[in-house]
Image (tube, rainbow, N blue to C red; front, side, top):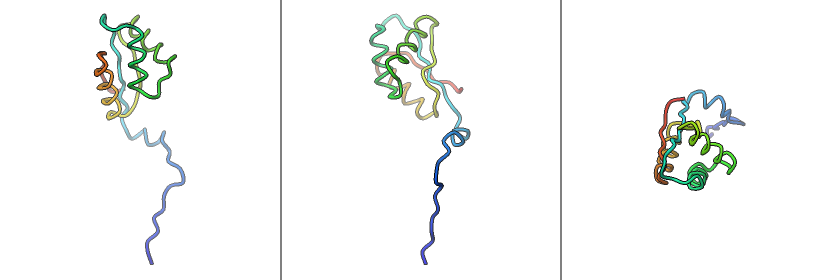
Length: 96
C-alpha cells in the first residue's frame, strides 16, 4: 500500500515569516533622476506598489534623504535593490 502524504490545509504565512528574517529596501535621494522617473522605476521594480505608494516613497526620499520601500525576505530585497539600481536609482538593503 502506498504511503499517504498529508499536506497542511492552509499555509500560515505570518508564522512562516517569523522564521525568515525581514530585510528593508531603502531608496536614497539623488539629484540626477526626475520625480516621474523614480515613481515609474519603483512601480516597475516592485510589483506590489501602487502609483500612490510609489509617489509617497519618492517624496519621502526627496524630503528626508531616504525612504523605506518594502520589508521582505533578503532574497527579494536583493532583487528589488538590483532592479532599482538598474533604473539608475540608489538603493540599499538592511536588516529590519
